[in-house]
Length: 74
Image (cartoon, rainbow, N blue to C red; front, side, top):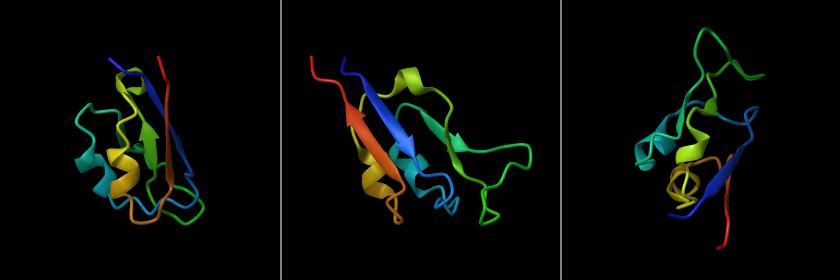
């Protein structure tokens, strides 16, 4: 299986959760315990980074383009 990695611009994330619906591998979630970004929104975090295959669905779903997806070539 391919290996991927995401980079999140947390300060631009508005916490809309649209990207989470696109991730079949439960890699991402919203921040918890009152953690918010500079805009006051809960932001995206990679909770299971080892599950990422670099499919790019999360990045395609994000309306604000805050996710960059990298994929290792084998």
